[in-house]
Length: 396
Image (cartoon, rainbow, N blue to C red):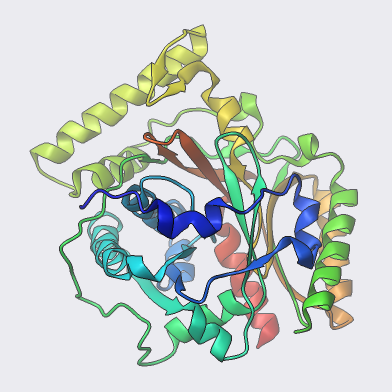
């Protein structure tokens, strides 16, 4: 893969002043229109619901998040918008990167098929085409930590891009079988943690989409929903889905196979076996370093604080035109949240979906060169993918 750092191309996003808190995202003035010469990139696992019903939710999450490693390595940093949706990703990138992005996504699709036996759909829609169709797409960023600024997107542009890519015979879809000269680099991708039990009994994935098309109304509806859900949940430190003490490094063969397969670009052979051995060694070492509090660094990180880093840099609340959250709560609070959402739905303000589990799942991306990192969080057993399926049934 050609190494590059397209600073000038990515300046639009890099120059956005980060918001200080999630509640700021409900102010329309916080968003800047995406440049017309950028593109929306969408990936998702085809028939993810069927795979989840077969118990393959970990593979779906890993396959859904693999593209972010490839594209952050293409741009040599995380200074562009991307949002994880459970079984796929949404990215915004400059149109000038279209050839390299197309090649890398085609190669990522081939890797997903080889490593996980799943089909990854990928496509790209120019922002100008969304604007021509009457849609809006605003961009903002929220400062989550020193290592991670989270992208926030507004408007109906993302939903329309998803529809355009999935339309029969879509010109925006990267054709099956297409390949290119740029190979995907998955360095920094890992799924090293056991499912994380909820300290309150329930891990709840929630997706909320406003019904109205008026931007001001959309923002106000989501502000009300978010504020009321937060009041039910209590302080963030109580509903955060990643308790530090419950994070345990996994030595599960499926997780080892996924990470080793991504690095080796194979699921058999001598190279794959070496990567499996290396991944297992890293996991055992991490467990020992955490247990004994040793001051050892790896990939620019102080290993003994990795669980704290996971929590601080967790991507458990997001907004891309729909509000998405993964939270810890009690069964009683879950019932109250679902009753609240149902009242908004019956009043005609929102469509929504939820999926409840007793644990969370985490997929991690660490960028060595920039020391940026993000930890994608979902509810185990289906999470966002099944919540989205429920919401689609409401929409009809």
